[in-house]
Length: 294
Image (cartoon, rainbow, N blue to C red; front, side, top):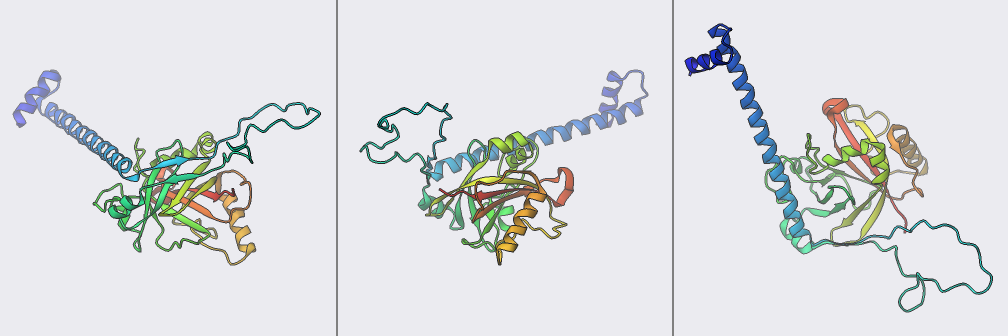
């Protein structure tokens, strides 16, 4: 093998001595092997992502009705006389047709049969995030296990183990798979672009066997998990309004982007994923959303 590599090297580099040719060829072959292994790994990851998404589509039984966004119209001059019939009335002619309905239903029986740890479903329109959320007493388990409790590196989105259903702030974690992957919470890194942040301002969380709540994305935060300081995005509850107002002020101070909510949110949903691009292993990207009033 050694001689074969040396001869191949002489054919490619005829003016270089044989021993040096052999070393060069060993380096080239090693590099090609590493590249092939990397490509094979990426293809395997991609196949795993597609397969898992297909399984989610098969089991979730999702039906979605979201509020209609009102069309912007030019103001019309006021006319004297009786008002014209409102075209927004319902079929019986009484009252307005309800265009403000949020209804997202799932096949909870199938989901619970598959995994009794399921807590709800997270949906961000026009993004890859359309995923079940689980929860257990161990924050580490679903870092390495998928929704079907199979050992998989991509894991599954999970609610913080200390979170209670009635907490002011509930935190959901999931992996950023890196590279070009859009699996789990990888696509949240797009929120570092202000245009994306502005264009993807709504998210929906549906409780298991419960109702759907709409949330407005208020802030994008680059967070150092190794230096929490005086502000912690995971703060679950506040003792009084002073504490609440201080936390909201500090959220705005820490935010990469911030959008003033329509009202003071009574509930917060926080999404957290790793982002090592600037802060290394302690880097987190945090998306903070306030519950909308309807």
